[in-house]
Image (cartoon, rainbow, N blue to C red):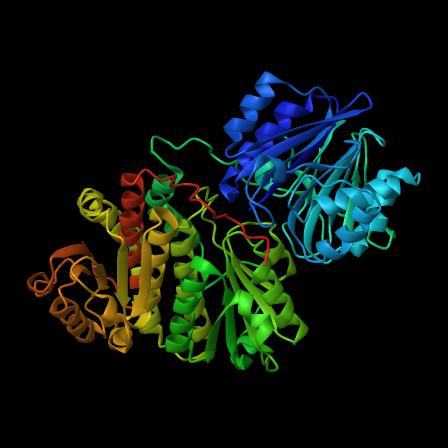
Length: 614
């Protein structure tokens, strides 16, 4: 969600800010704006909706100046309108602020400001900050001095950036908690800030990361860092490697379509170098520092995650318990720290996250560490907050995922959790070498099987066109593919705005049956695994109530065709690996239903890629 960019240097800021915001569009947003300081004045342009609206406004009235900040907003306080868009300015339009996160005590801070005569023009929590800074600037303080007085008063999650005509050619950026990250980028005679490396990579690969409770004062020639108490600190400069984002859709209609089709390659990349062919043992790189002794001593694992990543975590629990025989929990990250979790000595908390910046996941990790757990993160984004605060990291290596709804990162998570479960099992002696070798061989065959599923897209597209007007869908799964049902339903909700529910097949008779009629398509994941016969019985329950069944079945299952109206077929793989294959047709079904309904597939309404508010 919410993207931040900033520039100080000799070049015109407007095109640089707009270009940076373009690179942050994948995070999801509903309005955008820029503030540029020039010749003792501050100019602000904002627009509701997509960046094209802001670009058109700037085309009509270009803003001159070489220092500025830009923002894409995802609404929390106040509707997604122009007057609620960032940047927000003070009473004299001298100082501007942009903000990711939520300021929880804004109402208490706002009341005395209103009594003293400050005029507010938005419904946001953010605007209170710039009025607090205004008071400090009026008292004669510099912009960084004003920020250091104001920032400690803020409660909640906040990453912020300020510019002011009263203290020109300077940006003050801050991070007061585990809200979205702030990155400082270094150039020659120019410097940058951003909430995401993707906004910086075309300009610089030399960066510093702000941690919680740190402030950066950025000018064209220097960057100074402080703690919130005013103590001067030094930060290391990191070199970011890797290729820039390939912005082109490579001939696909949407980024999501491209990313669905990139999954065979993404699976190959995440498998690369992770099995020692001589010994048959799973190996991760130096970012995973668990010794064999530590692995053997793990008493329990708790997975924490949100949304799609939580569904991967549920499958991870199944895999680890089945293969490594370690008791596991899977917690929704936003609930974990509020339930007074019990952490035993030696326990591992595993965070599963695409972005590594989701604040609920970061807060759950912090809670686990506070209670004595070792932290391991499975994450896609190198340099993300989650990867930096963890004891151990497994990177997905899938490349940038632009569409808001996750696809290739999800399947890579499943494969890495599969490898991780085998890794633990091998070190604990709970798996024989022959079985481990067979499971790993099937993992390396998965990209080929996934290609075969993608080859059936035209049939899935036809199915999507038949059912795109349905008002409700039900997804049924059992065992390791119960979370696949949850993920299939989530993808349909995210993209098509159709109400969809995922449930365990055995739960139908405990209430769900009341919903089933001839108008409700029911997607049943009926693979020939240990729960096959039970799922066939569930399909009969649906048919007895006139429900329309769409079965996901193996391509050699001749029996299933006699019990369902529609069948989507996939190749066989072993039961523990099947969720990575089974989810692909469900992704395609959701994608084509959404596209048929004319929705914005890459940026669904009200959603964001990296959720940096609780």
